[in-house]
Length: 153
Image (cartoon, rainbow, N blue to C red; front, top):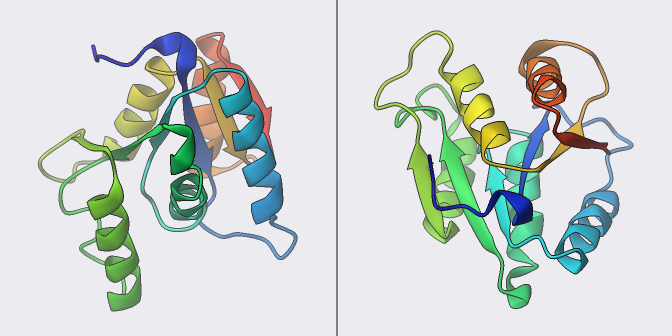
């Protein structure tokens, strides 16, 4: 599996589109509580939207000696992204404490495989889910099936 301590590892899942009422402060508060409860390793899926926003917020917490692990579904994940999105992604990858590539190339299902990897290696899943659709819904359902604690933002 990995060298992560399951009891102190958390992962994140969320939609790519952030609603107007999305709150950086709410995410920051949840992360602060996790850190105060001994969480040290944070797995982030590195997709556009929620994932990259969480990654940015986690970077502001580095003074607490945490590890931020970029969990990337495939090496060419950003192939179809805009130049601005690619730049944001590249900057984030460079700041990650570790990068885990689930696959060399894209394949149908690699995003789900990335989500399963993160859930399997965490004890808590933090979810930004405003609609029961897509990968976020599947990730939350998988976490529940695996009896993981899910915190909804």
